[in-house]
Every structure is written in C-alpha cells, then in structure tokens.
Amino acid sequence: DSDNEEGDEDTDLMLTLLECCLSRSTLEEIEFDYDISLVPIPLLVSAVSTLKAVSFGHSARLKNSQMVKILEECPNLINLVAPQRKNLNNKSARLIAHITTQVTKLDLTSSDIVPKHMKHILTKCLQSTTLKDLNLERIDLSNVPSILLANVCTQLQKVNLRATHLNTEQISTILNVCSRSRTLKSIDFTYNAMERVPINLLTALVPKLETVKMKKSLN
Image (cartoon, helix red, strand yellow):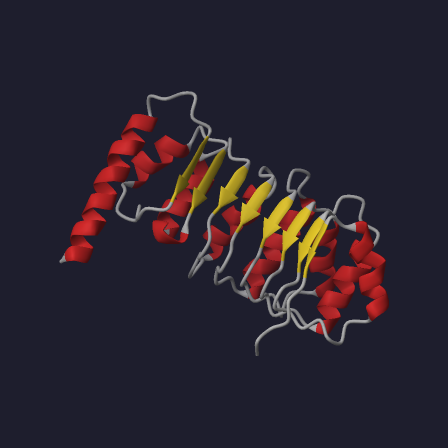
C-alpha cells in the first residue's frame, strides 16, 4: 500500500509540474527521476515537445509507448537521456535511430537492444552530422560488427563503452580506427577485456585523447 501511495504521489507531482510547463516558454531542459509511467502521453509529449534536452532517470519508468510519441513529436531535442529501454520493437528502434540525426547527445545506458536494432541505430549514428556524445554503457555490443562500431566512435567527441562485452577484435579495431580521429576526446572501456589488446594500438590512441577510462572486470 505504501508503494502505491508513493506512486500516486509521484504521478500527482508530475501532472502538476507538466501542466505548469505548458505555459512556460523559457524552459529548455527537464530531468525526470520520478515515476512518470502513469502520466498521460498527450500531456507528457506536449510538455517536452519544445524542450532542447530531456533526461529520464532510472526511476522514471518511461514506457516504450511514451518514448515513441516523444521521438515522433519532439523535433527540437538535441540531448536525450533514456536509459533502460526494454523490449524495443522495430518502430521504437527505427525512431531511436532516426533521432541520432538531430541530437548531439544520446544516452541509452543499460538498454536491452538486440543486435539487429543496434546495427540499425549505429548505422544512423554513422550518418549523423550532429551527434557528438554517445553512451552505450551496459549494452551488449559483442555481436556488433567491429568496423561499424569503430567508424561511429571515430567521428564522435565522447563515447561510453563501459561494460559492453567487447571482444579483443572489436577493441583493437576501435583503437586502430580512432587513432586517426580528429574529433574524439574521451572514451570509456571500463569492464571490457583489454588484456590481449596489442599495446601499440593503445599507445597510438591514448596520448591523443583528453580522457581514457579502463578498469579490469571483476569476473
């Protein structure tokens, strides 16, 4: 009962806040870390449709149906943080892929994205002229083609590949290709197996970056 009451309170708070947002033309960014799963889609979309940035924290419990409408009807978004996407259908994946052509930052941390959809999203990332910051932390990328992933990384400024199950070939290809990047400044390889990666590939890239993160997996 206490959980239900807390959920109702979250929804009431969000309803009040979002209704208020409809009349505020100066607002540019909202970060949600309250449960918004019961917020009606028309209200949620209307409230964020004019924003430049929106973040949905782990506690937001954003539904895919809400996500789809936001992706369809928010043409001004340049930053989107939407972690923990689960059970994406073809339409959801296609819309996520499409938005990479307009945003500068996309965060899909801890999402469950099948290889077919991930390849489509990354292919669109490769075509994007706006995307600078991509966070794929805790997404299984082990079945993504090495060269596709590397080509995406090399044109970004910041990429998070923490705990993405990369194999030695993938990491080596990323390092090799990114050593020629003119844009990449930061990369996170934390909790990926770096032990067998040729040291010359690391030394070719690391000195050229501003931030590099590597940490051995506990497994």
